[in-house]
Length: 402
Image (spheres, rainbow, N blue to C red):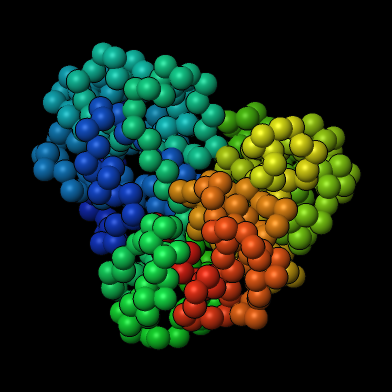
């Protein structure tokens, strides 16, 4: 039986390997490819390009076709099959590299991967939902893990114009943003960076935007439904009737300002208890549908401060609600681009505290320093400006951190 399953998987891989792949590689590609780990994980939200990255890794491998394989654990032919037994069969027959997609769809996947690590001589790349809750610290020590986020503004521009653009550390961006902004605009065929930013806010955060722009919002809605019904439903055993509550919570966050509701008020609006609300917020945060930001004071004590809730990216506004607050959209962009690699808290003075060091106030082009004056390492991050000056930095530049 296993041999039959393996032969079928090889046939499906042959078909998949003949498909046209994008030449563009996401920002984690080279790091994942160079990983010396026996098991290497790529996790992230649906639609961000995990499967494409796996297939690109296979294509870049110098192994022969028979020595490498791609499988997806959500395929019907693998239902009820032990992942360890399957990989063992492939390894015994000369397999050196296997890419396992949607690993969270496999039964008991943690133990199966642990056994593969302990007993088999084979390199494994695997992908999983960002909502996966790994229960075993012992297992987590056995593999390298890379998070694949949504497209950054930098990556979006590279895809639109087929150019190569640098990424910058936060420190370099803060220190030298005027020259950096001029350099970036100088590289772009279109110098209208504000128009390009506006376009990105509405569409282009998921790579499938470049497959069919006309169906983009429909695809986002399909992605949201799959995350809720398949990923969260399976991983956290959420019943179908509770999925509707998660959707209502998402829609409420979409039309509300981040601090418009207290947690008690939000729980009442959605129709659930406060305890259930916090549980659902955690699920949606892990699934990369929302981002949960706590107050800076909560770093030190159990302070009674409401938390800020944002949609995970600005394109979700297009799918979930017609009306949105421009200030919330600006903050959502900043959070989605910065939160990937930096710590964020919201602050009593200013909007955010980044890496417990930099205070940031976000606003339009006329935003002043009144709210953050006399605060060391403070900056105004302004929408609708191409190039900043001094401690005033264009909002769009924060899309170049990865």
